[in-house]
Length: 310
Image (cartoon, rainbow, N blue to C red):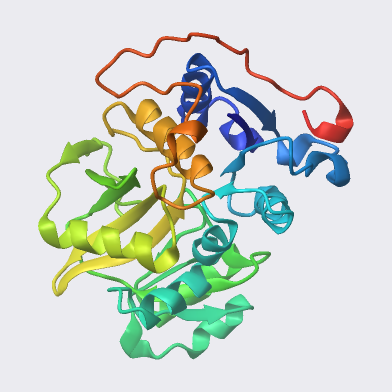
């Protein structure tokens, strides 16, 4: 297969997706990489529907990568994840509305276009967690304990676009991150960005049936195949506080091979999670239990011409 990865500068040196790209290359697939934030793209040429079997997105939420992925989808190119599904979770206000409407355990959510409008939230909803609707990686997340403390936070939110605010969910100070890949789920425990504690190390933890069921529903509700779910174990049960597409998959065993295989399956199935027909699976992608052998290695392809991205 020939795949195009959209990789933002922020992830240029990250294990995800570079390890996945190396794994796919070792299996004999051809990979092109476009840096959406640093490339002059000639769209009519870049979106040649016969050039790639699928496009894969690994970019920051506010970057231009999703626009390019949506353009590819509009041209009939398979995308991983589905471009419409990514839009549904990258806008956290939209994600909250979708999740609430489909019965997911999400907190009540307020959305404002100007920070000063947060003053209108009833006092009974405090403490509040306030964050950008297009935020990622814990950027600009604030815990506001009382209405009196809101004024100091408002100055820090100037320049942000849409904001969301949710009542704080009491918890132990750790988040459960559930990764979904290839129909399997893996849970890790990590320190909450609202309660930084350097002594808390991220680690694999057992996945309870209740949290696994919620994680599976998240994938179904938002139409995601490769994703992560942040869950807090609150006093009334698990609460979904964030969903993200193509996360880091840290602590997932054989993560690069698992994600690479999932990408191939999705590309072969036209973006769905069904297993592709045998003819669409070549070059060979070995099972996880068998060491990958590159029968015809192809070097990582990075288009050099400005019209194709670099």
